[in-house]
Amino acid sequence: MTLVCQRQVQGPAAHALVIGVGAYPQAKTPLAQPDTPKPLRNVADLPSAATGADAFCDWLISEAQLPVALATVEILKNGPNPAHGQYSWHGRLNSPGSTDPRGDIAVEEPTTPQVTAAGTRWINRLKSAAGNVGLLYICGHGAVLSSHPIVFLADLNGNAVQPWGAFLDVYDAAIGLKQIDQVAAAHLFVDACGELIPEIELSNIGAGAKFVRSDPFKRGSEKVSLLAAAAPNYLTYEDKPETGGRFTLTLLRALRGAAARSLNNQARWFTYPHAIHEDLKCLYCLQAGWGGQPFEPAPPLLPSEASPIVVFGNPPEIIVQIRLDPQAAINDGDLLVLDAGKTRPALYTRLKDGSFEWTLPMQASIWPHFLVAEFPPGGAHQNQELMFAPSRSLFNYTIKVSP
Image 1 (cartoon, rainbow, N blue to C red):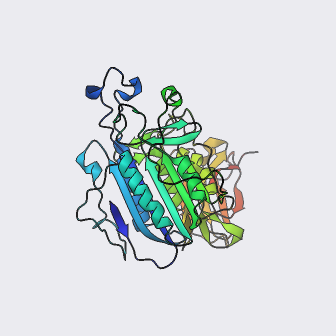
Image 2: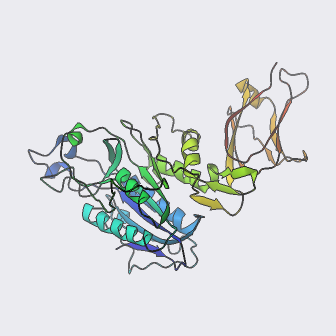
Image 3: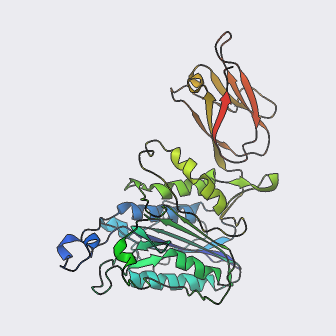
């Protein structure tokens, strides 16, 4: 067992299972047999999967403001380098009240038996008290099987009879979680491709790593979300092996507040699955250099109510993306954000950097602010002043400054 964080919690708690599959040692050319399926003869390693798992663990342990206290984090991961099989937060992260039960920094490899065992432990923790919240993050090579997102595990091609049989069907896990009475909410995140692989569709590949039962005769509660990086027949991409997958980086930006919402116009902010899915593509497009490949998240599985993943104690940092019409006018004058009293100096002033938009990180607020565009007298553009409330991220906010 590689429980890496544990806290004593009375009452409902959050329990997380984090999986990063960064190496497929048995699906390599030297081990290929004449009957090895062609796609499994040289499966590329994916070091960014281990990095993504690390990043998600770091967020959980040191930052996440969950609706109930975090009680446990268990992680399984591997990669082409020995360091990819290790995880340590001591000396790096501030996590009061947390302990690490391991004797060293090694973690278990995400093989089918070990993911099954870890998932079973996770489910048992979720059943330990009413009102518990589950979080599951998994990253690796993936595919779509009968519209279900699946992620391949480290022992892919390890079974000669069922070479495709090392996988986790995340949708199946989501359906099972709906039927666990003690679970108040569960949130599942998949950073993996949505490839369509005919060999899988035409083969009996088994159940993979299965650790939660779904009863076809039992009604479940719509309390589970599933956000996956790629729709069927789409790929995902990494930023760099050292930083992780682009979906994971975008997801964490959303969870840290960029996709926060203020409900009922109250000065309290939450991040919930519907909002994350709504903002994912816009947040992805903000990242310079990521526009060369398509980003098409899968249709989400959403709870029937806005179930918060994060509850912020203070107003989070949101994003306001501002453009002018005509576009080039943005470099001819000044852009300012003023408070409700139009106080000078401005809260925020754009630096003229030659770009054609202003991407402004700012503190969320339900109160009025003023966006001001000012130009030299006698020019082609008119000064403009617009009132707005930055209660959530605003994308492609355009101001017309010419007649």
